[in-house]
Image 1 (cartoon, rainbow, N blue to C red):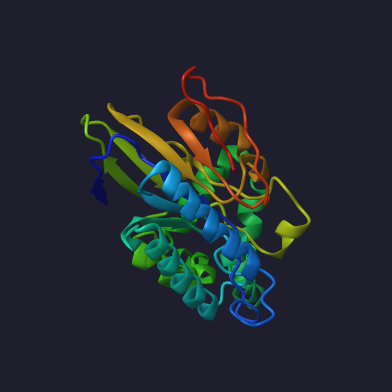
Image 2 (cartoon, rainbow, N blue to C red; image 1 turned 60 degrees about the horizontal axis):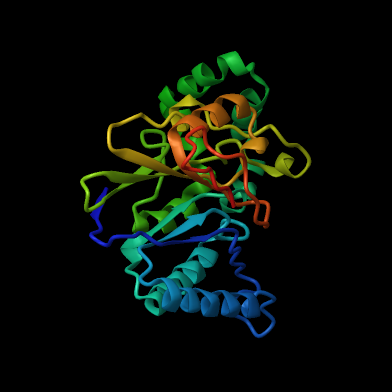
Length: 272
């Protein structure tokens, strides 16, 4: 995916954990109606202050329980937000969060539970090989992404759907000096299930996702739902991102925070 942007500065709106719920969102008793209204107003104020928005980055938990109806509501709201910000919906990019996983699918499948247990409990040294084995297995690879079926149907309209062949996505933005920003979307919910509620450091990315290829003239913006301290392979991922991604955007914690700066003095790693 390639996009050319000629403006002298690039402004992105970062959203996360918007949690559309089919039982409440849009109803008279929607607890988040005022919050979304304030968000829309704030975004419009920023538009007036800073100028055109070049893209909207959504770091997961678009839905509340991974249901189709919730993604329909999310699509309508994102379309509305794009209209208010004069930003085309082709410049919306998303990654999945734990609430985008259908836990019911996992609870009804002993096979999926075994796959998750394997990846959660194998040694870190064997993690990449275990992931590779499952992704090469035709039955396993389809099953593993089944809990994200509704998310993927939503994400495909933005070119952000994922599967075993394409576990990540990237968007190249060509700048007017010939350099590029590469937005890299990751999947931190490969093994997410109800045990996330009680355990940390049990999720994972693996090297296939967490090692951005170094390229001349390319700077990375990494999108991931879970902050790195939720990952089993934290040490490797943190080292890779610090060295190779100038900006890292996260969700999940429902709060704003800043991580340690990048090894490059002029560029920090900003985590939200």
